[in-house]
Length: 320
Image 1 (tube, rainbow, N blue to C red):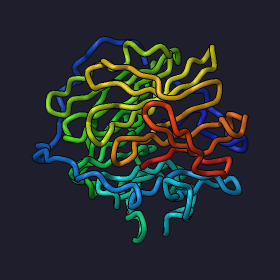
Image 2 (spheres, one colour):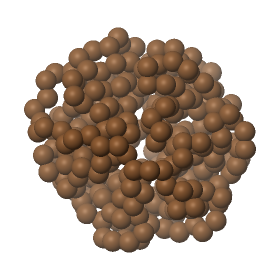
Image 3 (cartoon, rainbow, N blue to C red):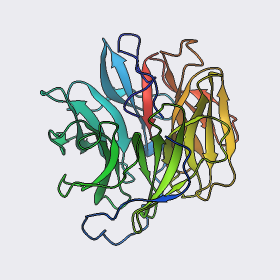
């Protein structure tokens, strides 16, 4: 999410905001073009060809880096602007979306190739535009904007930045969209105006219906969803503001099968699926002992083989 506890000590810390525990709702009718024909997502990429991409604070400035899943070959994404944040790798394994601060002080969405190329700015003005995710067929981008609502809502645009239109209309902040592999649904977090709860919702792009997913979750703040490439699971991080306990969970699209993968007293944040849907990368403070510091770790779905991947102490927001 755009605001919250994913910051370093030198960056102002803003309290996490959250969404009412609502029942399934139907969003207003959309004004949008016809969606492209839904096609299956690409075959899974091999782990050897799929680096973990993440955000690292260096000298108080965030930049986007890549590292192999075994921790080798750390390098920066070429050509990125200053203050680049929250990377999201497309299903093709080549396209990278991220937000960066522009000359007018706002955050805007950029697109580039993962290992080469010059970033292209896709949004301009109209408040802050951020947390973008590429559809499996590469034709659409879901993103968050506060242009019409200071809290933030989910929007949709073509991959070239054209035809931007609003999808959600919740009273609190909507954030962190992630696509289902068939391209029909978006999972996203939604936060209530009173800052008392956050949940994951499923948005149907064909009908406009929005359905609460995390009704059975034991935590009050359920955030940063990521849909597995095989379509079977949605991962998210959950924590309780009072208990200060964090965990990474997985759940089926219909709300069944909720399972805790890893967690504890240390911060566990923003799970990201491996291309073969067998592992999760996430940011955690378990090695640093300081919740304002974190590194990227990976873990199997049964909670075993918990392995530290990065050692920068200010590494956040992985995408795989």
